[in-house]
Length: 336
Image 1 (cartoon, rainbow, N blue to C red):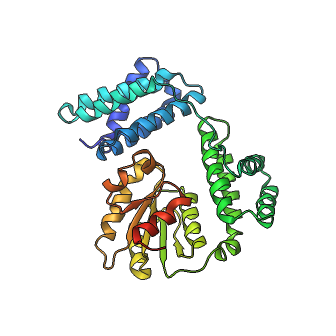
Image 2: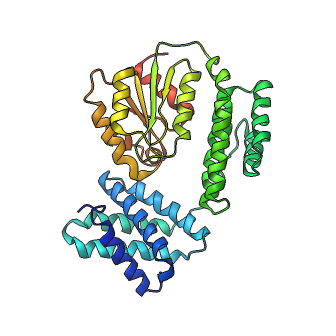
């Protein structure tokens, strides 16, 4: 059974069941229905990729998010139970894996799961904390001065990316999840970091000797979280590669067209949202039809949750983070 094809039928059944149990209100119907659709999308992608870890991680993430919005824990548990019952009612013969995934996620919910700061002990922790404070205070000018003065005082540009930009972006996402900042704050902080990154290219281009190697970096279609893959592109530039950065939400045919036109050694594809994994596989399948075809690297949050997912989508390699991507690529290509 395709969960997505029957998504609206399942969502309607789940909402009706939750309303009967007193876990949903008519005035909140649209919000509740949207939450149910998200549950179904993540469940569908996890089942398709034989990856309970993807759904378990999503359920824990959703529990922290919803509890910080003031919703009782019974709402998420009730939704999962109602989803299982609805799918069993619609297609009992093919619903066994779905039931197993939901049962496991309900058990995982009983375990302690806390949200901890993403800015941990590391060489530039104080700088990262100060930068976070400034962007959250909408002081873009001071945030910019902080980064530029750090570079002038001898901090390396790759360390700014690795120890400031990367953990701060993760922390901003966490702060949104626990309802400490709004979507507007998250977007503002990201735009400030992107603005500052655009000023650092003089430092990036002189960071190392140039190599006769080329990277094409892109997000999949339907993926709007682009700052991670932009950092990947910049790290390759810092290490002497020529990088071609396509940005977010790039159509598959346009990606393969650019691959044919530019013939990169490596194509780096990013997906942050689990429900975009299918788009990653679609692009890789198209790339495999090209001659010559590049080596394909994938990255993004779901690939870190399921460490075998990169193989399932047909990639050649996986980078856990932007700062480690170059090493992975060069080891794969056996260049130094």
